[in-house]
Picture 1 (cartoon, rainbow, N blue to C red):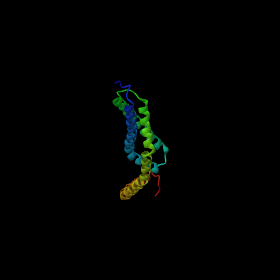
Picture 2: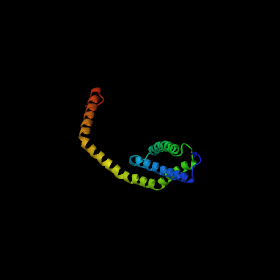
Picture 3: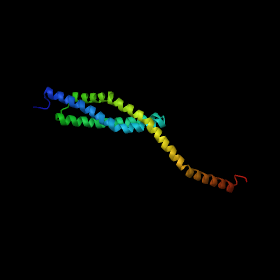
Picture 4: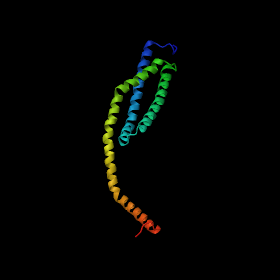
Length: 160
């Protein structure tokens, strides 16, 4: 039987498989993106610049689009002998949409909720390190001040 003339049962299976492919690709991408979302939300807590968020989202969206397109084309080629069925593309997009409306929202809330404690822990660690290194910093600053004063005395800019 020709690949262009497949049975309705086979087409229904291809529809379901492509729906599952779209949802699975979105799930994998959501899991991979989750740690980077922690970093993004933590960075947004530190600085309120929107440029970082735009570049970050653009990078991951382009990366996802490329991987998604390659995966769908390979799936169509492997499952349907290279015959393009548009319902497969549409149903994989619909599977991705279903993911974003269900688990995608949960992952976004999780990353936003975990960003605040992660940021606070980072601030605490930074303050402790700064406190531990303060004697070294103070000694260096003291040396710089002494050298500055000696230089000014030598040039005659400071009167005794």
